[in-house]
Length: 576
Image (cartoon, rainbow, N blue to C red):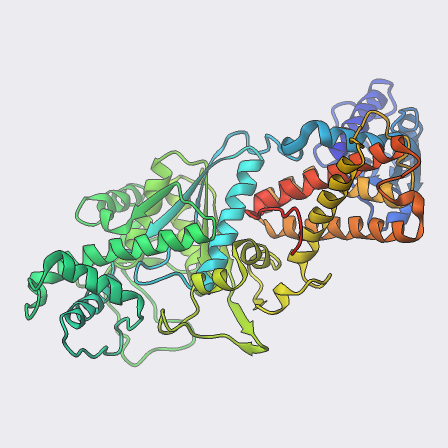
């Protein structure tokens, strides 16, 4: 049940009828005809640009088209008025019965309200978090985890076949540093004094790993050189860290469908295969890069390298894939990883990166474009930094992590639901201030509380109705007539359109914003009921009206629940 889509279909139907009657040329392209809420609500309930977009191809004045269309639309019982504005915009006012029908339609659809086949089962890979397996997830990873997970849910809600994926960066030098750090904790477990040099990981989280390693191998590695223990401890430590990361993600309600190991690309021919694919397309060559623009480092010298001709696919400069010493660059395994994604048959790829990976966007898009012959789009979403505050001061450090605030710290302070919602109260590429004290406030300024409070209030009314023996009934909604009630119904009607727009733009924060606006409309109606008794949801002397008003707020409950489910937040039934 999507009211905006229904009214747009009505507009198209009447435009086609006008063409059939000779009032418009035949064969006009209708794809740009839109029906949207007007910028100023005083102008009506909906507005269409039909006359404006069709005027040029029809070789007619837009106002003439609008007037002809308006005369036909008002014949439909759903349209109370159709007014031409300005050069040819058409403002529509819908009948009261239409808004009442929105309520009934939402209750019929229930958890399916807002779902669509927008994605047409397209296979989409959403890669997010992908933190180095060298320690617990920090607050910055938390934002990427929440954003990626909510985006995956949003795409699933709109008919996409989604795979949630984590790329384990276990092929680089950082895992060797991890292994050396665990070895120090292992020696410590044997009673030795150790010192953590710069570049090692001093966090307390490795103490247990060192002790567990001692329990497993005894003193087999004590006093031995790296050639004896480095490989084994690297694998042991990486798995221990990934188990820790999985536990952290579970605390946040994030469950991945697939974990992909970078290490699996090395020594298996997979990097070579990806580069051979690019080479077969004439995109690999031996060349010398220019020095960085605007400056020439003192240690820079021209060296011949194996380069990917990424400029053929929109990049600013070509990128090295092999160093002059024959080793792979960091970019080479990333190319191979995305070649694997393309080979798995995904129709679209989404990567969620931290803000510090902004320089990687063009080269990765170029690589996927080349590997897929331009058939598989890659959207890279950057998540900006999170600044954590507590007691009015920046909250910077966790003893357990050693140098940063962990995901676990945040969830233990405020809970998973609050953490997830707050992380989506800003667009992903905007910095986010996370004030631990403010997200605990019970006020309108706290969006988490405000949305949850709306749901809890509805549950409270439903409990009181049950005690009074009153059941919701949407068969007669003729009592839903007040402008504040109809405004709430109008907000509910926007949900399917909002969800599709958020999915198309890969912007799950829009759902959080919408839920806050919906909660505001609900609370406004609640507050009006304090002064205007006919607006109260339970009418002591009018059970028919009570049943209709219960249907209205049940529809609000459905939409809040559906929206929170996309965000991965559990709606509450009562506030503590």
